[in-house]
Image (cartoon, rainbow, N blue to C red):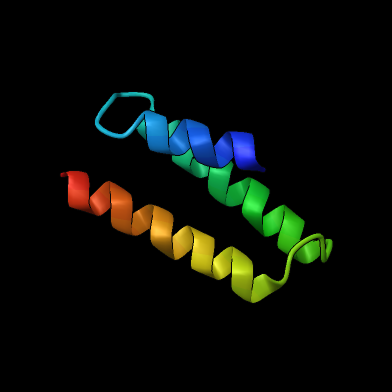
Length: 57
């Protein structure tokens, strides 16, 4: 999960970013559905990731 988030933040502004973002969100959702992390924590991490990506545009 942390690796996917790190890959998504490192690829901001590159052509690989949409795919890395999709995989990071998928991994967060899977972790939340299996209760590895709390669903609100997953939502918070997704929100912060989207804010970083949109700020870089």
